[in-house]
Amino acid sequence: MRKLANEELDRLSVEEFKASPKNSICLFLDSVRSLNNVGSAFRTGDAFRVEKIYLGGITGTPPHRDIHKTALGATESVAWEHISEPLEKLKQLQTEGYQVIAIEQVDESVQLHAFQAQKTEKYCLVFGNEVFGVSDDIIAMADTCVEIPQYGTKHSLNISVSLGIVLWDFCTKQEALS
Image (tube, rainbow, N blue to C red; front, side, top):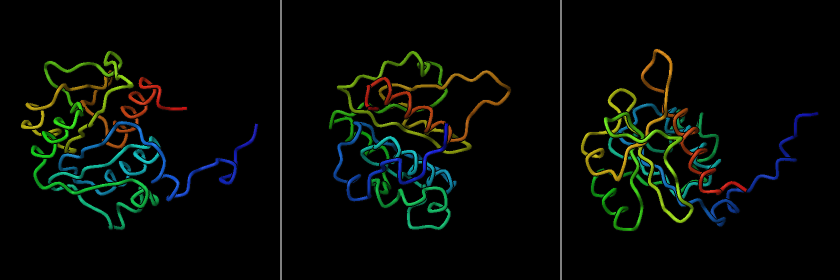
């Protein structure tokens, strides 16, 4: 067994990525304050070929060196847009056929392993502020809330970790990885 060289990984160029089909998933960052978390969202979004990343509220936007540090160029490949009115945009996405799924711990949340992502559905996954989580207004209008089960003493995961877990789960359930 040997580690593969970068040249052997058969990665897409930025132009090829932009022209390639995307998974029917977009991300919405709800007032995420850490620019490193924003950069991680871009890098993970690139890895799973998300359609777009919406940067809502106080979420920082490229270009910024702290975003670039963790995104490693993914701000060039993944489509993104800053949204000053998150509720309006999320309602618009719902009218366009997206299920708005808040990733949050609420009284009626569905455990991630029990949520059945469908290949024929479009999803907008909302990740919230590092301290306050997804805003109450977004939770109230979301189609559902999904929660990552946790068994330790801490009550939350870092957004970058949550993004990776949830995107991998949704993409594999949609059989989008091939």
